[in-house]
Length: 213
Image (tube, rainbow, N blue to C red; front, side, top):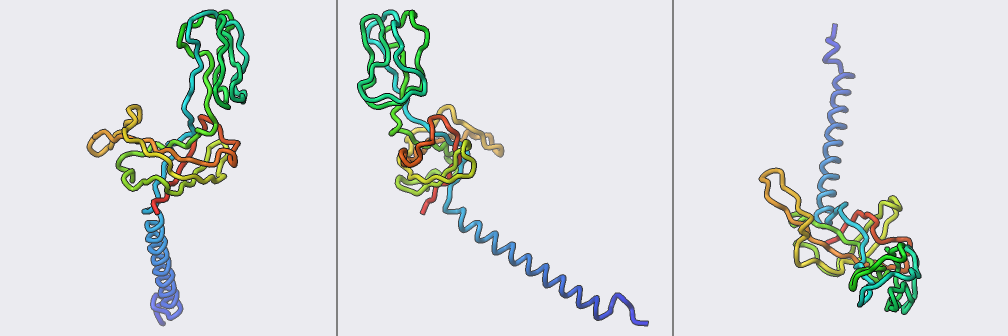
C-alpha cells in the first residue's frame, strides 16, 4: 500500500502551500519596503494644537471696571469698545475674537491688568511639537503639511510650514528610555487658509504629517 504521506495529492498540496507562503512573504517584504520609502519622507506627530497669540487689552491706569461691553466667543470689528474702566474706554485696535472677558463689573482693576483677552483669527496656526530626534533637521519652511483635528475626526486639512522655533519648549521635555537623556521639543508653526477652514478654533488638538519633499 502506498504511504499516504508520500501521495502525489499531498505532495502537490504541500508544494502549493509553500508557494502561497512564499508569495505572501514576498508581498509583505514589498509592502514593508514601500512603507519605509513613503514614511522616510514624512514626519508625523499627534502632539499639535491650533493656536494664536493672546492679546491683552488693559487700562493704562487702575480703576473700577464699570462696564463689560463684549463677551467670550464674540467676534468684534476693529476699534470696537470692549470695556470701561473708570473713565477709560478700552478698544480693540483690530478685528478680533474675544477669548476671555472679565464678568465682575465693579471690580478694581490695576493698570496693565488684562480686562479682555483676544486673538486675531488671521494669526491662527497649527503648532506641532516635534522631538529633536524625530526628523526636526529635515523640516523646512514651505513644506507641505496634512493635518487632522480631533474635533472633526478624519477630515483632512492642508497647510505649509511657516516657522520653525529657534529654541526648544521648556515645558516639552521628554525622556529617551534607553539612556534617560533629555529630548527637547521644538515648535513648528503651520499656516493654513483661515477663511477656507473657518470651523477651526483656537485650542483644538491636531495630528500633523509634514512632507519633507
